[in-house]
Image (cartoon, rainbow, N blue to C red; front, side, top):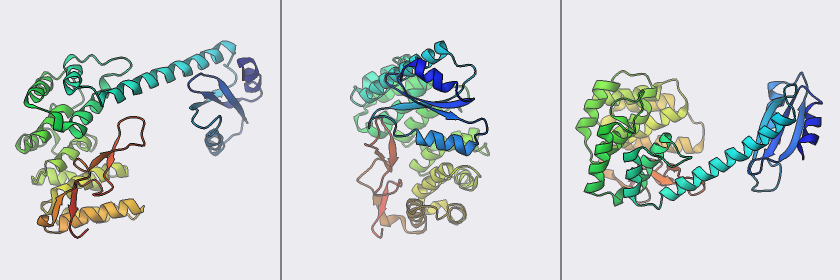
Amino acid sequence: MNTEDALRIIKKSPECLVTLRADTGEILTVKNLSATASADDRMACLFNADGIGQAGVPTVSRFLGSLPVNAASLHDLVEETRRAYESMTARVKILNGWRYQSLSDLVAILESGDFPYPTTLNDRYLLFELIFDVRDTELDSALIRRLWAVADSYQVEIPEEPPAGALRLSLWRYEMRTTEFVSYWHKYLNGSLVPFLIGPCVFAGDLKVTDPIVVNDLIRLVRAQWPFGVKQRAMIALGKIGPKAGPEATRAIRDEVYDSTDLIIVQRNRVLARIETDPELWHDCNQCRRGKVIDDSSHVLVLRDCPGCYGLGLISSSC
């Protein structure tokens, strides 16, 4: 559809939904909305936009008020859509390429802070995952020294993060430096608001921290009135800690993790079994790394809970 035809349809109603082909910016459809359209009407219109075009063709949809739209602004929308897609695909190409670059090159990016455009400093977290959760067997003492130097320089930290930062936490976990982690938690996280506990709680589980302050904060996360993803992270961390998480952990999990889906039920029950049984019955899962596997269905690196151990990284002979 050319911009003239699209503009003519847009002007027929106060508001419309425009669907464009993301890679070229071509306008595929314009759907008019009445002045009395409800939120449900808008959502239905948006969902019905799915599947427009040929299979595998990327699309993007935008709600537009018709009054300010003109030929120039519509042309700008087409160009903006096309440029955004080009930037996204270029970023994905770089991110996927990182999986095959040498770790020395990846560490060099962290050392310089010079992330190739269109990646940004925020992509450092993907680098941390790639280095420590996917390719950690390739690490050697020289690379670890370089990573510690970066962590000590704070080049990849942001002001809102506690002084440890994600890189230092990853290094503590890699070297199993539980004492430093617990000291950090006591100083900066003890009694903190929930958001500041979410990221570090994962490391508490991997380090199998038994300190009562840390464990109580993990239990507080399970009981927090936050989305399930927050409770899930804390629940898995308590499961990795095992019996030393204690009966209060199992009470919190039973109280807060409901029978919502089959997967959540199985994961919850696996965590409870881990906490309530002899730790000698459990052994490392040989299908994953600390309970995570690469999601091959994603076009970029995404880690998900291992289907064999449900994210625990441990298997029981009784399961």
